[in-house]
Image (cartoon, rainbow, N blue to C red; front, top):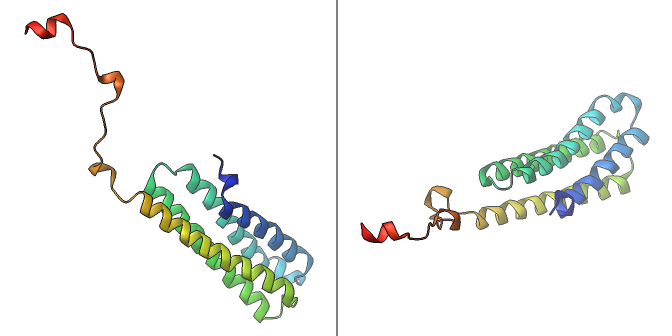
Length: 147
């Protein structure tokens, strides 16, 4: 499976594209390099951290850490969006509501995904007893029986 099949990645990608367009097309010029730049970076960070975490999915604590950082970046993106709207740098309330609702949904999805990963990987690896792989199970030989 690819990270591209994760709904959290798909939604974060849509949000990144919409935020990128919003910052370049609707914000005042001075905001493009201030809060506009910050919101682009935090939204891209959310998406990238999901990808990075997925790449470390066999290492549960790493996976969870990256997902928690993605959640934090998503929260940062929400804060930047709210600041832009409250300062009237972003005046399109329909666009604001659309992006804001999807960011809130993404946060909930990330939280649920983190909980799912934690539940499915509760036992630390030091407590897991592994079966001996077949390649280490040598058949008895004639010499083994005589000793």
